[in-house]
Length: 173
Image (cartoon, rainbow, N blue to C red):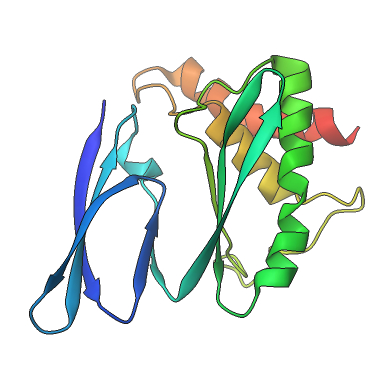
């Protein structure tokens, strides 16, 4: 129901993860070891670790029933475009709290890593015809539901997988 992870990287790069950084230690040969913890139920396929020259911006989402940290990790030199794009996160959370109540993972917060394109080379910073990013909506909805049910709970996994698409339709229709 939780996980610890250690990652060793060259010192000129940083590591960013959806886990909590417990410590980092300089190692011989210009390397750094990061010790991370996922202190909530998480499946191995949900563990996110990014390596690169990234910067982080942290804001707080505040609403009567929900206050929690929101972290945006983005590539250096792309800050303004990413922040403009990520302004949608507050709108998506506002919609989710309107329909579903308080965010169920306030101590975990919300973490978003800015990909510039997906595995097929599609630009992920584009908005749909409603002015919202479907990928961002679905990512927020996935983190809203926390970890998926166990592999042997087929119905639960199908509901978990379809919830983000339901949220996308709910928020843009």
